[in-house]
Length: 219
Image (cartoon, rainbow, N blue to C red; front, side):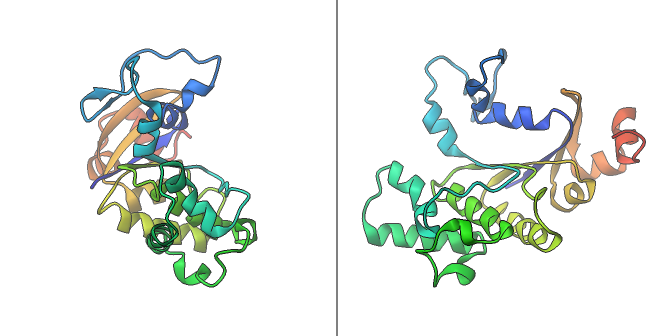
């Protein structure tokens, strides 16, 4: 699966549009279409819950739920009707492993998630998002509040996850975009300036504004 990276300004708003989170903002007016597998997610009869289930969202700062590590990951599956303890245990272990967190927390699953480090909380939130089995991971500057070691851990997980998921990452860190992106969209002041395969954008951008941003002339 590809990983797409959005760089510069306006990108978080676009990410929220993908997940229908702009619906929650009273001042926002929406026009146009967003197509997912050929279907407009903004059509009047769209199932918003189903759309959000297909797109797991990882925000800038981790927001673990005020409950145990186990219950954080089991929360989504429970909402979607999974109640058997054994099945929930399998899901929790599976996605904590996928997020690279299982070995660190397997003996403390009943502890409050708030006791985890910030980096661990971010990986827990990743596991929680994956537990509802989305098709797409939306990551809004997911390492911006993390130390370098934790950031590297998240990047390593993304490199593994993109084998099975489409990942859309918002970042303002060009080095991170170079490390992770297969496809890049460059946005500036809410406008899409250029998009294309990562090597083309970074090595031979077609738009002067893209070139200036990559060279650090504009920010």
